[in-house]
Amino acid sequence: MRTISRALNVAVERFLPNAYLFALILTLITLALGMTLGGQSLPAMSEHWYNGFWTFLEFAMQMLVVLVTGYALAKAPIVNRLLSHFASIPKTQIAALIMTMVVSGVLGFISWGLGFVGGTLIAIEIARRVRAADFRLLVAASYAAVIATQPVSLALSAPLLVNTPGHSLEDKIGLVPVTETLFSPTMISAAVLGFFGVLVAFIFMAPKPTEVVSYSAPTSAGTSQGASGPSLETHSAVSGGTRNNVAATTVAVDDDPRPAQATVSDRINNSRLINIAIVIFGLIAITAYFIAQGFNLELNIINFIFLIVGMALHGSPVKYAQCITAGIPAASGIVLQFPFYAGIIGMMTGSGLIVLIGQWFGSIATEATFPFFTYVSAMIVNVFVPSAGGQWQVQGPVMIEALGAMKVAPATIVNAISVGDMTTNLLQPFFVLPALGLSGLGLKDIWGYCMTAMVVLMLICGGIFLLVPVLGW
Image (cartoon, rainbow, N blue to C red; front, top):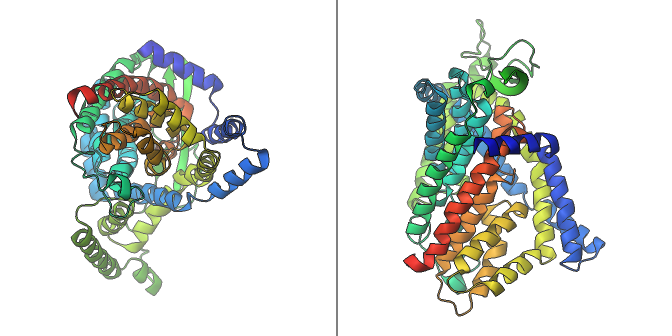
């Protein structure tokens, strides 16, 4: 497995473009498929592309808030100390790997946004302390651990969506309770077996001591972004006699930014009273939400909780603002790339490609194989539509229609699409952008590890969905 991952890493170093170029190339592939398989003209495809281009603005902003508020939360003194405590426990590369994946998996169970941000930060902190651990491996393992635990994540989009009154398919499938999706035997098995399978895979992929690319402390060679902003430092580590560059982001936030002779404006900037008033107001809003909605975790409430808790833990408005500013450079990939993926979704939907994929798999499936083929089709669609909620909206109706008279529960279709989407997230760089932004690594640094983990996850989850009809899940 180490040989396979090394070969993939060599291949991607030579051939894999920047994550932004990946989105552009995928755009051109979708264009070609829409014109050939979908029978669309070039002007029609350009119209589908433009119509979809800005549909991700809300989601892109949500992801930006996930990243910067999660970053600020993880950089709060008490949370930073907690992460440092966990990071101080492992002493070997394998122990560092296990700690990184366990912490990331737990955070991912609470929320994938928290998992992607907090998991990456714990990977950085552990790599900073454990010199024998490969930095690239830990960042990749952190991301893969969050992906593997997604079947039972409290913030998984599609299961929450179909349990929400008024969802688009309520007239056909009704409300599907989370006991049949998130907390079903299918999803629990996929999460538990998937996590341990991926963990074992990463243990086998761990580089030998002579091949480790370790994290190095920042040097004065970095580029300053300002007194309170981040600086990107290029660090070097010897890997098998070859020097490798690994970038990492460090943040300088003053413990007490107030000058000796504080002005009125300084006192306002550092006013704990204003901070406390906003935090109390926010806690009232959070309490009111849960009273009205129950324990319904979705992206907006997760972001709002991150925001309010982060403000509370930083203590003053200016400290929190400085930390948010420090986290923003890591979000540049989201700003640039999300519109292109929205455009791809527009072309996939407008040209009917998603319907063609669903109908083709539905035509060759039997009642016994329908869950498996739904899972496979979801993996394919996710490469072009990298959003679980968005994918369900466009693929769910197709697969529900393809069910026909088959005795397959709608919850099984929700589960198969959710897990298929999750699996190829290890191939599609859409959700790894926050991890790359925070760690300073490039896609090619971790893609070989992620691809190998994806194959393991495919075998495990594919087997589960083949057994679903047999086991009556």
